[in-house]
Length: 158
Image (cartoon, rainbow, N blue to C red):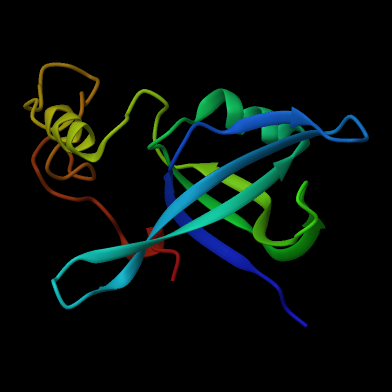
């Protein structure tokens, strides 16, 4: 049998952290994951998936991601039910995360900011007088001072 879930999406709200009944840290967050198709109006829908994470990973999620952060989740799907205060049976389906990967720095909050930041980081010209490459390596990092590449067949691994 196989129960494996892999998701990439954005948090819809800041993660919540609490202590479980046994004192274990439990984190909850909801992930918005875009659907791969559009509707009749050309709009792309999203699924909002509840996720739960435990122990140190729960603390890391609380400390390092926030609403709008892009994360990758690897885990398993779990269904449970409980009785609410009105005596009604409530069914919950959620992803129990084995791993949560932070896919962008904490200070980046929206995709337009990310695009402009990425463009800025690659707009600096290469400074050939400096040993460090800055934000862009030289045109051919394997070339010697004459611009040629010195590789013999003995240097090749195949």
